Length: 305
Image (tube, rainbow, N blue to C red; front, side, top):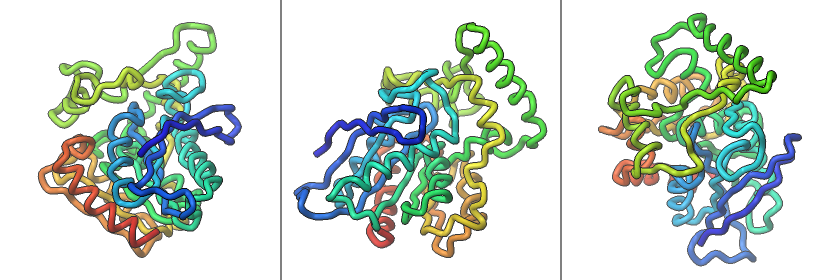
C-alpha cells in the first residue's frame, strides 16, 4: 500500500517535497513501525530506483518514504534542476521532520538509505542528524569527490579548479538573465559515455529501461560552485557513529567512495558488502542484484532499528 504525499520543507526555502509513503502489508495505524527514508541518485526521481527500494523494504515491515529532491521532480523550487548538495542533505532531514509527526512511526527507529549521490547525501545527513539511527548505502557516490577526483579517483583536487570557474561563470550568466546554463549528471547521449558502466547510466536515464519525464539527466551548471568543494563525509571521523551498511558492486568504478566512508566513519559497527558481478548501475534496477542488496538491507535495518 502506498500513498502520494506532500512534505513541507522547513529549511527556509519555502519548498514542498513530493513524496510517496509505502506501508507494510497489514498496516495498522494504531501500532508503531520502524521507518526508512530513501534518497534518489543525482538526476533521478522517486519513481525510479529509490521507489523500487522503498517498496521492497516496505514489504518487510518498514514504513518507507521515497521523495523528489528540492528543485527536482514533482517537488517545488526554482531554478529547476538545481543540485545543491547542502540542500539535498537537508532534504533528508526534512523528510525525517515529517516522519516524527506520524503517530505510527517510532521516532527511535528511523533509518535512512540512498542510492548513488543519494547515499552520499544520506551519509552527510546522518553526520548532522542523529535522529537517523542506521544508514544503508547502495552504489554510494560522494558527489564532491566524484566531480573533483573523477569516477575512478584518478584526478587531483586542484585539477578540478576549472569546474569552479565554470560554475561561477554560469552564476554570472544566470544573473544577467541569460538562459540558465546546465550540465549533464549522466551522459545525455550514448556516444558521450566514456566507458560501458557510464553508458549504462545513459541507458538508465534516457531509454525505456527507466527513463522518466521528471528526470532529464542534467543539473544547473551553477551547482558546480557548491558541488566541487562539498564532502559528503565531512567530519565522519568524529560524528558518524551510527551503524553503517555500504553495498557496492565488485565491478563498480565508484566502489572506492563506499570504501572511503567505511574507512573514515567513527562508527564501530560498519560493513562493506560487495555484490559480485554488479557494476554501479546494476544495483539500480537489475532485480537479481537489487534483491541481493535488499537481502542485506532488511536484516540490517531490522536489527539496528
